[in-house]
Length: 256
Image 1 (cartoon, rainbow, N blue to C red):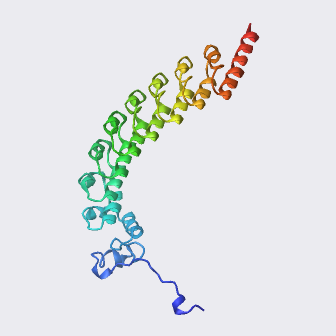
Image 2: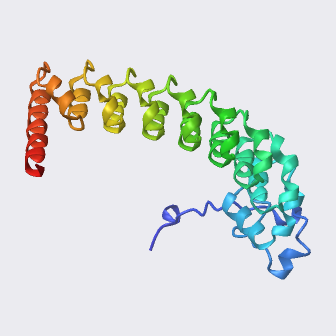
Image 3: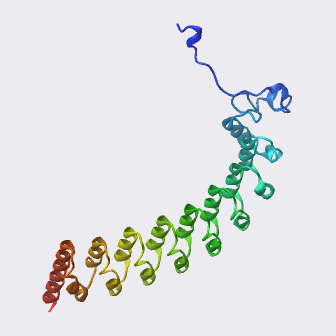
């Protein structure tokens, strides 16, 4: 038998039902329960269970002094109650709103001070409005923008200061525009350029300072460019150029 000192203490937050406005209504009816389904407790789990059971009461808590109570209430509010909460001082509340509000309200959160709010906006904003966020100060917001911008508008991010943004761009930009990124400072990005570029444009990257980029070019180059790459300074590039040139030559002979 455990001694009194070994008994595990129950740390479940409990509110004082005597101070609750539902003590004579919901409590006697069993519609709320201390430690389990309670809007007055400092417990997100209990508050969420309360609003899940009583979503119609959420509107009474849009100005509650406890940020978590407001944030959870926002999940259950009808849409027509959400707009006044867009200026809520707590980012957790605004993050909920960014997921729930109609698309036409999202521009009001484009310049929100919280990064997560703006990421959600960038993930939901109609594509034709995304350029409004192309200069966001946070690189991760711009990554989301780059993932969703129409292909023909991606050129404005080809020189973004962040590598992750540019990597997203280089994977989506039309192949005819890849030349804009052929001199990118990140070799990984230049390799993707070589992997995606149209064959007739590969000469642009065939003399790249990094041999792995040139190798990628040799994997896709046509006979004329492969002939030039037989003199590459890197043995692996010369070898793949020779192998591919021989293979292409054999294919031509077989079809004659």
